[in-house]
Length: 212
Image (cartoon, rainbow, N blue to C red):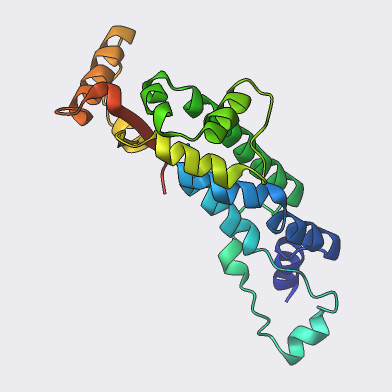
């Protein structure tokens, strides 16, 4: 019972922390990330794992006690599921969400600046071109109000662009022995040549896929 209560109190959230968890899930930052993740700007799996982790956090029952466990030992909580896992820290989880948002906002602007997409500007409406120009000159930020429009704008610009996925496993597989910088460069160039073989290279954009 003592161990059960120890883990329960460590891995269930206090009332204030649970309310903060609710705020994170309802925040504009999350809503914005949910839109930008469709652009595949990197580590979508990591973002979805973070949201799952936050969603799975539950509030502690303040009335939990040894007496209550003796009456009903089944409280929808199993300490075994948490052995070795880090303690939930809600402020850190919020920081991680904000980090995804910042990286994806910057990635969106970098994508809009991509010289390889400039020839597709002619298919955009004047309003869309104006929005792109304001974003790349930082006169306007990617916000919840314009994110869906920015996502659709980029989808239009990406017409004719071929996405090629490169996984972390592909990269780590190159390092099967100690190598000089020249050897690493040669191996990496060979990998890029292999995954883009037969493709028009200026129309290829490589997406790094994180571990699932």
